[in-house]
Amino acid sequence: MIFGEELQAWYQEHKRDLPWRETHDAYKIWLSEIILQQTRVEQGMPYYYRFVERFNTVVDFANADEDDILHLWQGLGYYSRGRNMHKAARIVRDQYNGIFPVDYKTLLSLPGVGEYTAAAISSFANNEAQAVLDGNVFRVLARYYGIETPINSTEGKKVFAAIAKENLDHNHPAQYNQAIMDFGAIHCKPKQPLCEQCVFRLSCYAFTRGEVNQLPVKLKGKGSRDRYFNYFILKNSDHLLMSKRGEGDVWQNLYEFPLLESDHTMDIIDILNDKWFVSYFGQDADLSILQQQTKHILSHQNIYATFFEVRLKGDLIQKKSNWDYVILKDLDKLAKHKLIFTFLERSNF
DNA sequence: AAGGCGGGGCT
DNA sequence: AGCCCAGCCTT
Image 1 (cartoon, rainbow, N blue to C red):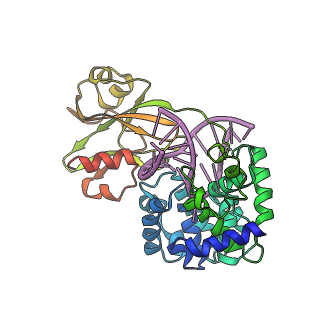
Image 2 (cartoon, chains in turn blue, cyan, yellow):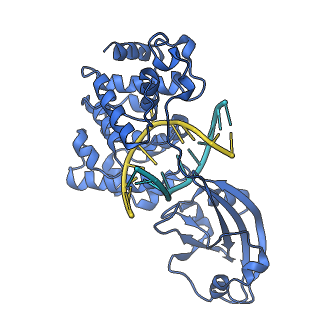
């Protein structure tokens, strides 16, 4: 319990002033927690304000279309969070009378809410005694106790969950959880932690043994793969041909331009001779490059994208079911991924 | 148990 | 170039 009390004392001194800490509204806490999954506070903050301003209650949120949610989410990444939030909001509206649940078990059953988020919401909104276990907590515990079990292994999750649970201050679950996460984020940082002025400098296993930079241990995943995206911009008078991405790949349900993917760079000749291209745009289409190949980096993919303008003699030969002409002035309303809205910002549409 | 899923900032 | 970020879901 010394550990937890020291942590909370540190927290009183150094805690961050964050908007979602000023409310006990479980809906708003849920918003913040989903937004902050794998996302830095500074990056998520504007999105939090955007969402609370647009949707005052979870019922307002549920009554929106998924497209609206994804549009507000545009640019934040991991878009399944937005899609799952929409599903969760409708469950709360339809099954829980619009009252956002605050108990761990019920929260855990909502789509997009895992063990961390259920613990966070139930403790913050209702002081339920559930210990959070996020990247910050893994790091603080690994260093303080000198635990070398990889944090992303099944065994590691068990070990750390047990220690996190033991350390939880049952009298102040909300404050303890906030404290250990803020401590990890501000003080016990991944790089260049502030060990010299740390309250635990005498008791921290990693610091006393000079192993701070070795902990926590994490198993390496697979490297990145390369993909080559060829986008086709087809404008006629005041319309633009857009395409909605489907399941089973990145950017599900977001809009982009008709796309030809290949496993290598393609030039104009390659494309004009491509079977897929000819089947949709015909033999005598005119092609020019609008934007030279640019590299877009995702966690496990390097996407090399080139943007082409297509001019047809007549009409499209065929139109895919997920293709639609969009009025140019409605373009802003579509939820697009980074590659697309960055291109649009740079061009003069 | 492992892989997929964004985008950005820091080293 | 690699790592990490208030992780979750599917296979």
